[in-house]
Amino acid sequence: MKAMTRREFLKGAAAGAGSAVLMNGFNLPKAQAAGADEKLLQRDPLLDGVSDIHLHLAPDVKARCTDEYNFACRAKAAGYRAVMYKANEWSCHDRAYLIRRALPDFEVFSSFCMNFTYGDKINVYAAKMAVQTTGKTCRCIWMPTQTAVYHQNCFGEKGTGIPVTQNSRLLPEVVQVMELCAENDIIFATGHSAPEESILMAQKAHEMGFNKLVVTHPNTTVWQMTEDEIKRCVDYGAYIEYCYLRRLWGPGSAMPEYVQQTGEEFLNYVRIAPERSFISTDLGQAGMPDPLDGMRTCIKEMQNAGLPQRTIDLLVRKNPAYLIGLEG
Image (cartoon, rainbow, N blue to C red; front, side, top):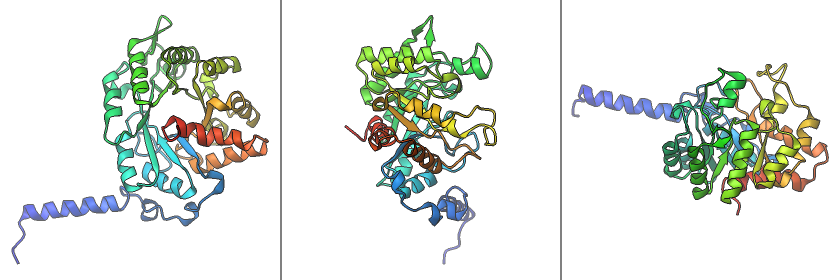
């Protein structure tokens, strides 16, 4: 046998180590990497056909309860139709492409957030690259979230952040991204913009004839909108996203600094215009409920409150599936 050179040895060792990492789910415990917890791999009729299109999972810069691949395995097993991931700091559309290769019969999509990672203003070029990436898995572009001017004024350093308006008018680059979303038939989401800014975006989408603008979680903290404001956005043709996270955080949770929304308050929101609304969990935070459990609890709460099955289907199945391109 020919003696192996040091270079050949190192090359082989590196390849073997790389394979071991991949086979072990990026160094996750073997059972988790393989999605092998049988208790979590049972089909649940309550979750059948659900699409959750706002999930925060690893890899990320914050601690998460699980990673995108393993959750996709579990969501598929539970009966989900689709998931869409959101990372505030990094794009995740390239990862979605790889996950789809590993799970070819399950719908996995991603989104793209206009935060500081891509500059201190709305980066139209970055948005163009996101929608052109192999696999076309980017199905939503969010305006700034945690680095929005409004978010920073409320929770961070006042006077900082990435703007979307100037003198109560949308910035040209915001309109350009909206046009890009329209051309590619994907979601344009208002992010953590102020309620009045979200209304301006909904109005502009209406003027353009664009039908996939989403007003982000107007049931949540400083982004809360009145019923009249929500109806105004709906009249402009916008879709309204309600996040169930607001029902789960608060005292005694891993996010105790926030005020928990009551069941009655949440249900009052989802009853406003269910034909133009949907529910996402916005879950994935370390220490918070698993997203599957969150969605399951949400559906049970709506059933117990007497919401018609047709309404529930619109909120967690039909409307989110339409927005990510699975429904005509």
